[in-house]
Image (cartoon, rainbow, N blue to C red):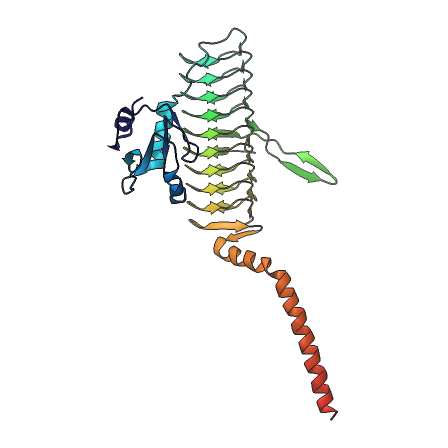
Amino acid sequence: MKLSELCTLLQGELVGNGDIEIINLAKIQDAQEGDLTFLANPKYAKYLETTKASAILVAKSGYVDNIAHIKVDEPYLSFQKALKIVYPANNERFKGIHPTVVIGENANIAKDVNIGPFVYIGSNVLIGKNTTIYPGCIIIDDARIGTNCLLYSNVNVYNGCEIQDNVIIHSGVVIGSDGFGFAPSGRQYDKIPQVGKVVIESDVEIGANCTIDRATIGETRIKKGSKIDNLVQIAHNVEVGENTVIAAQTGISGSTKLGEHVTVAGQVGITGHIEVGDDAVLAAQSGISKNVPKGEVWFGYPAGPISRKKKVEVSLRHLPELNIKIKNLEKIIIELQEKIIKMEKGE
């Protein structure tokens, strides 16, 4: 589309030739003729002189003199909107219910639900309108799936679990598998029945190959608006607060509670039965073993407030030099002691 048309859709301020044809979107350092790019991070400003992009999104306070541009409040957010405009979502989903689908007794499937080949729908399952289920999914008895949900191939939803509206679940996710509950009995372990469920609230997105365990009793709950990356393990009776984001390879142990708007970076391990306060940030590869206060940034293994942990890290990097200094000081002390002893003896 023309740059002027895109500017109108983005509600920006056009500077330059509005008749430029926009074909693709690209990063500023890779952009070519016909591409729209953006500048949100100042460290990429160096590419302004060399980019081959036909146009650029910039902040209203920004200044560009060699390229057509659209001034917007938030270039990064506007670029996301432009992505949705230039690359509209592929809505060519399955139409209707494929004849290979197996549907159990008393299942309630709303109108406009699309279900692909080789899906199993158990007894008493409820599926809301405009939901799409891709091939190979398994929805076991008494599960509930809301409206406008999207389940990609090979998602497994165990019995009694609840998925609310506008939820996206990527391939290989298992919701409602048994929690890791075993009681020691001598040198053996007896399995503790896991009779609770999982509740996924509205507007949640779950990445590929995640596992969310059902509660021992009660619920494991992922609250509204949370986003979970690939390969995340969430144990039984965990509660994830609203609009929390969890990056890949994170593991959360049982009965832990994350507050609202928490950020969990990649490969974080969180022990069980603790609480992480609202707006806290857990840095990558941290091991969280105790409660994290609201709004704090924690890092390290074991984790602690990042300001202190950074000082510890700096000190560790200088350990070899410090070790040499200590050995030299020990040598000097020994020499001084020998001199004092000689002086006392009158030598």
